[in-house]
Length: 235
Image (tube, rainbow, N blue to C red; front, side, top):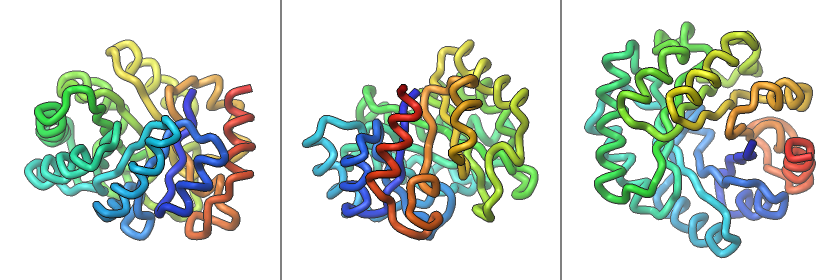
């Protein structure tokens, strides 16, 4: 299980690297759960992280159902040099829309570089934003040939992944993703007390920000908290 940490700038990326995070995930928390950062910020972090031999991902935003916009944003992220391109299915309401959008993103990225990985993210609190149920994502993702499916939370109000989906449903998601040949990731205001159950669920990646910030999602990432989490997950 890899630990993905989401810095918003170069300074936080340095802290994440000091803490030995497995994947550095560039995002902009001001623009939402999977808020997109600026191309020049992504480029700077990629240049830094690659010196340490780590993987980099970048978010393209909490997307409306606009496959053209999503595919263009994904291509921009791919060109920046990241290894993973994450798209949030925020305005996607059903499986047909999800397939159309994910398929367009996959084509844009893979036509540029077939070695880059596309991550499609649904939301545990989908019912609060009228979006697609994440339990439908493994089937749709496999059909669209995405590399990784993910669950996050859309509304950052202090609730966690486990407040919106129970362990049984999360286990179903993880198992279905693996059975269909994809990797999977779990995120959504994860807390220290969740580490045990996350290990039991065994997703390939867990994504965090708030857990490794000094005082909430909008504060700064601290290397000692990243190191503590990595050690707890890997031991």
